[in-house]
Amino acid sequence: MEFGRDTLSEWEARRPSVAELTREIANGDASAAETVDGYITRTKLANDSLNALVVPLFERARAEAVEADRRRERGEPLGPLHGVPVTVKECFHVAGTPSTIGLTHCREPLDEDGVLVRRLRAAGAIIIGKTNVPQLMLWHESDNPVYGRTNNPWDLERSPGGSTGGEAALIAAGGAPLGLGSDLGGSIRLPCHFCGIHGL
Image (tube, rainbow, N blue to C red; front, side):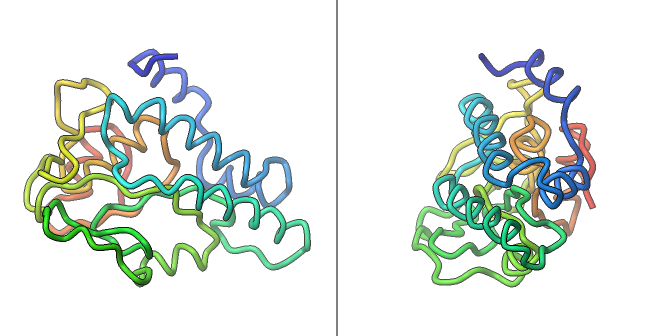
C-alpha cells in the first residue's frame, strides 16, 4: 500500500477516538500490543512521504505495550491512557533521545524524561516516537538542518505548519491517536488548522 489521499480517507473512516481506544484496551477488547503495533505500521507507511516522525522508539514502545497488557491481565490499576500510543514534539525530553530543536550541536541523548513525558507515562501512555519541529521552534513550518522538512499529509507540496507540525502531520495521517505539543504563538493551533485536526 502506498501513502496518499486515498489512504487518508480510508483511515479516517475507521479511526477510533482516544476514549474508544482506552475503553477497548481496559476491557480487553483490544490489546495494547496490537494497538501500538497498528499505529507503528501506519507511521512507517506514511513517514516516507511526510518525514513527520524523526526519532522512532518502536522497539521500546512494543516492549512497554507487552508489559501494559500483562498489568491489565494481573488486575493492576490502569491509568486513563493505559496502552495508548502517543507521539511527542521533538523539543520534549525523552530519556535516551536528543532534544535538538533543530540545532546540529544539540544531539546528545538526554538522561531522563521531562515533566510532561513523565505524566504521560504515569497515565499509562506509550511513547512511540518524537516528531519534527522548525529550528528553535520559531517558524510556522517544520524544517531544520537536523531532520529536514515535514510535509502536509493532504498535499505533500505544502507545509503542515509549525512549530508542532510533525505532530499535526502524523496525527492527521493516522500514525498516532494523540500527541504532545506546545503553543505560544499558534504552534499547535496553526498546524492543526493546516492538517485538519483538533488541538488543545
